[in-house]
Length: 237
Image (cartoon, rainbow, N blue to C red; front, side):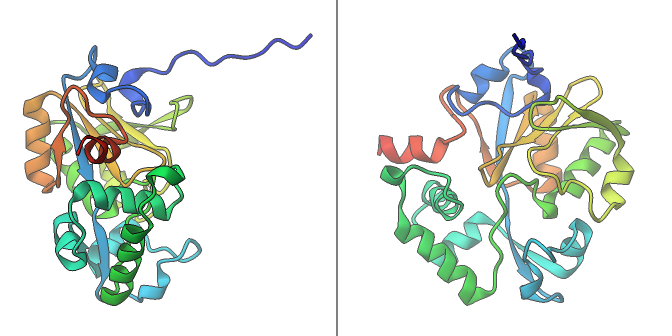
């Protein structure tokens, strides 16, 4: 009889919080604050809009140099979508990331129509946002970090990376289900596989410095915040 192999529980300092647990509760023994930051939309400026397909998707530094960042706040104004929660739900619907009873197809259509009208690219689920990562990594350098661990979704594999190399590499951080954490676990950056935002985990002082330096758009989790925070907000209202 073949023995069933069961993975050990992952290190919490190296993985994304699960969907069915309050985020801060999951990290409580490691990080006392978590900041959710939204992945911005992309507006091509000196690069073809049509290149943003899986086979030809531009690299990180190419996007930074040749495109313009569109915040969620700016997209709400352009689209007329009511708030961040509805925008998050609409983005999830586009990637079939919600059950039908929660799906607001009208919002998803508004996102598609707005992107087409203004030639804007929606963020890709499960990927770190190209526009923000170099700034976040540089903010870690300013705090004395030269190296950072890169791990897969469950951190069954990890690699120590020189931060300068990640900044300069145009194709770096293109893997889905990726987490980044500093060598002594002071800071964790992770993104949920079906979401258009990432989690920044650390203490309040460290997070506030990174948020300010990188210009992150988002909010601090409260004790009830979960990965599907947008559904929580709309179901309560």
